[in-house]
Image 1 (cartoon, rainbow, N blue to C red):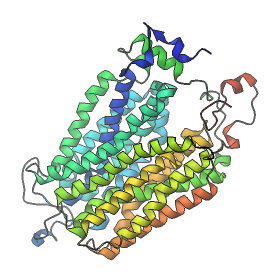
Image 2 (cartoon, helix red, strand yellow):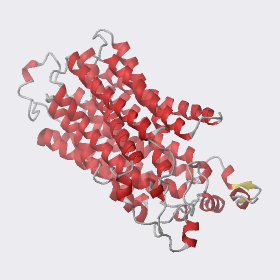
Image 3 (tube, one colour):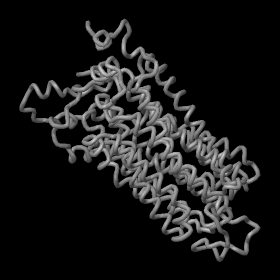
Image 4 (tube, one colour):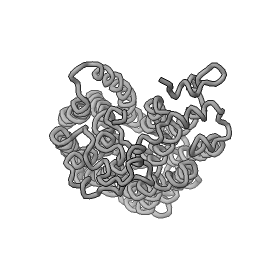
Length: 499
């Protein structure tokens, strides 16, 4: 049987034997794109801790409550402090997500129609500018102005994931899609780790906390230069790609296995929203993001106010759980492959097993975290690492279930659930602001962890009961007037092969 590989043999070597090709360059650039996107999302979490006045500086507390005016001069304003209420801090952290959810669906459409290169370049460029002007917005407009800047940053970043997905669909040969996708999306955890690990040192240096924003934004402009010269929306548009690699990509990226946009039937909205497997997927995605972003945005504040950890140690300790998560994601990929070789382990069991690992083990660790004494910071860090790190198992659970349910409408399903889930991401810090009235109160933080545990438990329970891995009936159009169109657009079965 002739395969794509035998058709793309050039010069005695297969095109895909090249260890590092232009397609890998695109993924490395996307890796750093996502790394910076996530770093800019979480930089405010550490900066809020760094810009708070020292506990001994009680004289400034009242005067700084609203606009943070301080007798300091210079571009960096390294000695300027702000004493925000928990509600104000939570609102600033949430503002990003309310902008982020607005542009997800439009971003995917623009990337599909006009290409991902321009969209990502403009999106990251605007986000870089918003990052760099954040200290100025705070100085001259107060916390409310910073909310506006963070909202605009969310708008600019909303298209990052759909555009990256669009780029991958054009550049990834079918047999390399897993590894190339991993290269791209692992940048999210990398950026989180780097920002949380380094921002404390930057804030504690002579540069001061504003440099967290200045240096981060500057990296964005460096990335834009590389992106402009070395990227393209499709392999056909890239000027440096070899003929062999171009032929290999275009002949093996599985075009035609699913229905094209022109031939795909209208989205069956009523059937989707009345489908219990989809509703359970929607709920578990929302509960996951609520718990995940609650921890991501609040760990620095929790470590400082409960365990009196200084800004350097807080940043390092806050990054540790996400380093564990990055490493655990590769372990779970290996474990999944081991289980797939065993008979009797169905796809449904596989999905629900990993989702339960990623959600129900954190339920117990979060409850335990609420009872850790204030003098036992190492135990708190261990439980946080377990809670966040083990959640990497969900990459093999609900996060790929969209494709199981509906290969043809997987993008639509992801847009729906991810949009709703990011609303929950914005609500999470607001909920903390309402619960935690005293930031040094263990009992207040205990309620926060109990709430996150409850969300994880309920979401996964519904997924276990109602979640499915079979392709749903509404995935294939009912009325196919042209049999040829139907054959050209045969949906993929859950195992990735044509039915």
